[in-house]
Image (cartoon, rainbow, N blue to C red):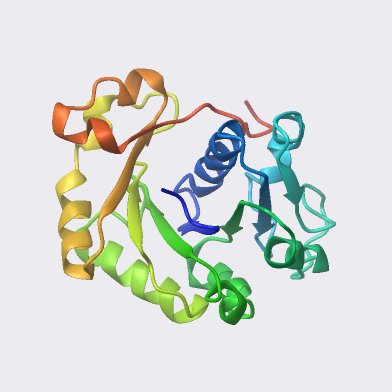
Length: 221
């Protein structure tokens, strides 16, 4: 069962924003009053604003920096983010910027977050630099925890190579992530991918499958 506040974080290129958007859509589909907050303080390639129309059609409120998806790069967050805590939302999703630098942004809200049932899910793509091994994943999690002043509650396996991803690729280095989770004392919550990828997960992982629809596309595709 999901919490009142769900924080998604991870290195750039992990796919955390796509997962956060899908999670928000899934929460809304359950009839929950849902808000998603883009807490990136820089302008990466993928932003929740890219999925604005679909989110709004599903009844999800989107809160994002004023200059998201522009050429202006201002390290600031809108005051509207307080609505995630003050509003009567059933589910508030916070999409953090990548790495510990991005996690600093949520640090100023950690006291408010801790007043609610919450979780922080750390997304790992084991085909990306700096998250290819057990130790690298552990180092990433501890760095994000220190910057955000929140404890990670679970990991997410989003290993992929974009449109060429197969179930075999998702599972290729999965043991590294499972070993990292065991040392950190937290579970691997989801194995994520598009329908064809997660449909072929082995039986013991079926309950951890989280199917993604692709809502974010870079300008050059």
